[in-house]
Length: 286
Image 1 (tube, one colour):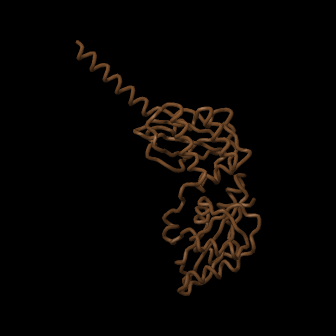
Image 2 (cartoon, one colour):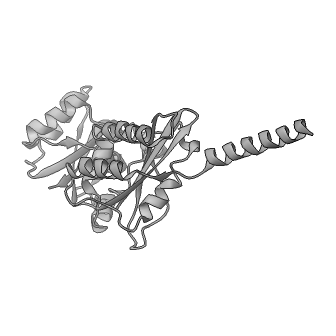
Image 3 (cartoon, rainbow, N blue to C red):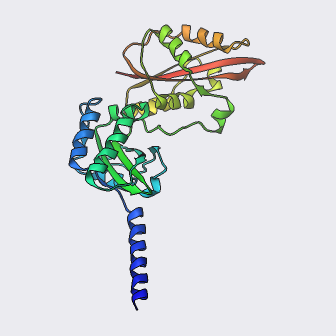
């Protein structure tokens, strides 16, 4: 009889552990909410913790043990009750304990890491509200998820499709960005999100275009997420991509009041038996 009871208790204990491991995350402790808000507001004074807790509760569905090995942007296929887009991010750190003091430490570790990551920095600077949840003690990890609204450009995920890959489109190198700053007469923050958007726009079809419409850029600007503009250039590649790109950048007009910039280039466009370099840059105004 004792063995049966012990077996039942063990089974119940295992089931409880499994349910807890798959459960949703919980809101940050009050001290952590204050800490995170102060950190984020150092970049964006208008940003606020979601007073409705909608983003907090929704973030809990992504701060689960299933995300213990996940780090980076996540797709949120929902909108706020006000109809605004949502950007999500999930991250993890070593976090085997579930007591309040330990949880506060885990949160600080993750948030401090985000403050030095340009992808998250972009989102923090452009959102109005946010909410976060945490799930500690997930196989030795603590999982943190934060949701921001509105979602910054909604393009944090890589966007290069097969057609773009076939055209060998890639982001500017640090050296190419320095050249761009020199010719455009401005310093700016490099944005991976805008690099992705630039890669969507950059096309060998620009060779025959006198006025590229930048349709994807215009679409995003129309949504009100940010004021965006695009520039592009084309020149023949005479076995020297660097020289060809310099020729393109020399033709760029000075760009003033730029907050962030992202550029992409391809050097394998063929047209009328000639090879061309094509480059585009997308920038966000202050």
